[in-house]
Image (cartoon, rainbow, N blue to C red; front, top):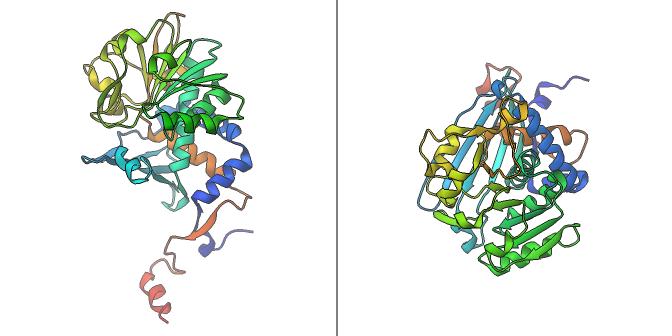
Length: 349
């Protein structure tokens, strides 16, 4: 039966509680794999998408950003903040929500929380890149930074890239203990380390994800040997990096959208003409990825709108026929589209 105009105006809204229920309904590993599949599918059709660096409002405390894109049929955007000092006040560093809309009508078709969903899509993107760029049969990952992203990164690497051991380090030992406890029973071997140097021992994949908004050196040049894959996700805004510049000069660098990454990523430390490879080109075969076992590959990931689009698309598909959303009365939609005032007048008590 076709929807009535009033039913068409109801927008599915996925709350935090419903997102958590959806994850448990699908299974975390399966959802990570599904989002990664969507990201790969959308990256393979990269030229179809509108692409622009995110619209950012920076302050001393952090950043608030809008991340829009469209494939011509569906439009999507995410609102997201990044405020590293929030944790001191018991608040999240990152919060987010997102929306999809039908390009033909402009009507929204999904509104959802994206704090959890961003963690899932970030981890799925990292693991997809590692599956493509890391040494074959990589089994050990060093996780430098044990904050809110660390468990998602570890479990995505297990589900998508096949790692079996994660070595944890954080300057706050309590964060490492928290992460280790959360990963107990997941099938991963978890090693708590007291230094970054200890964490990277025997690791084929090194993930850096720290929160401080500063030019930091989490990895020095002498810490990085041949043949590793670095998944750098903590350098994600101007003035915030984690790697010594010498590492960048030794590595083959892969990025999402160069125009954004040169502003926000590790490569903000390099000249604008320093060569990088767009990851979508590797997926389509237009560029090469890892070609030498001794090669150092670096995925300088700052997060891009198409990844959010992919995750939103996944959620929209998978809430159909489930109770994991609220129909939200978000749109004013009078019976006569020319009579918005009449709708208001008739609603008077």
